[in-house]
Image 1: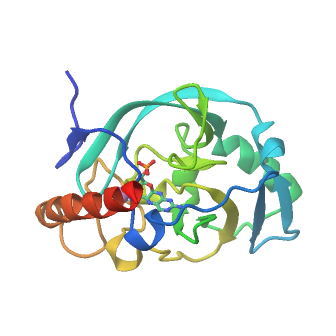
Image 2 (image 1 turned 30 degrees about the vertical axis):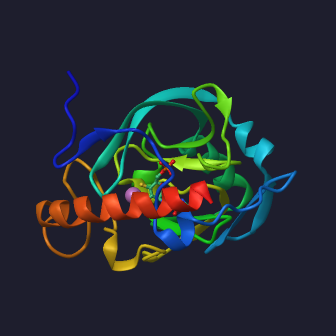
Amino acid sequence: MVVLPPGQWPAERRRFGLPEFARVRPEVPARPVVTVTGVVRRPVQFDVTELLGAGLQVQTSDLHCVTTWSALRLEWGGVPFRHVHELLARRVRPHPDCRWVTFAGLDGYRSCLAIEDALADDVLLADSLAGQPLDEDAGAPLRLVAPAHYGYKSVRHVCAIEYRTAYDKGSAGWKAHRRGRVELEERSAWLPGRIWRSLWRRFADVGNSAVLEVDAA
Ligand SMILES: Nc1nc2c(c(=O)[nH]1)N[C@H]1C(S)=C(S)[C@@H](COP(=O)(O)O)O[C@H]1N2
Ligand SMILES: [Mo]
C-alpha cells in the first residue's frame, strides 16, 4: 500500500508548472552546459557530461506537486547533487557563508534550496527517466530531483547553479516555501498547508487543461 504525504493524491506525471514557464519548450543546445556562479571564488561553466562524470546512479522516487498530485515510483538516473557539490567546492569554491543554492532552467524558471536540503542523499541532477534520456517534457538535458520537497524545487532544464548567502524567492515567489518539505506540508510561506490544499486542487485542474491545450496546439 502506498502512503502518500499529507494532502496528496496519486496521478500520472505530466509537464507542470507556472504557465509562463511550463508552456515554454526551451531549445536544448547540442552541447549543453551548466554555469556555476554566485558568491564564489571562481565562476565556472561545465559541460553537462563533465558533471555527470561525478558518478551515475538510479533512484526510484515520487514527485509531489504542491497542487496536490503525486507521480509515484519514477525511475530517475543521474548524479547525486552532493557529489557534484564536492566537485564544485574544489573548482568553483563557494564562500563558506553560502547557505542557499538556486537552480535555474533554460526556460527562465528558478528555484532555491537550502544547501543542507540540496545535499540530501536523494537529491539528483538527473539526465534520464525510466532508462531513457530526458526528453524536453521531462526536463532535458538535466533536471533536479528533490523528492522530499514540493515539485517546484525540482527544476527542469538546469543550465545554471548559483551559490548564495541569502534565500532567493525564485519564480514561484510567495507561492513557494523556503524549504518546501512535503512531510511537513510546507506548501507556502503563508497560511498552513492544509488550507492551500483545497485552493491548489482547483488550480491543478485549470492548470493542467491550460498546459494540455498548448500540448495539443
Ligand atoms: N524549468 C522548470 N522547472 C520546473 C517547473 C517549471 O515551470 N520550469 N515547474 C516545477 C513544478 S511546479 C513541478 S510540480 C515539477 C513538475 O515536474 P514534471 O513537469 O516533470 O512533472 O517541475 C518543476 N520544475
Ligand atoms: Mo508543482
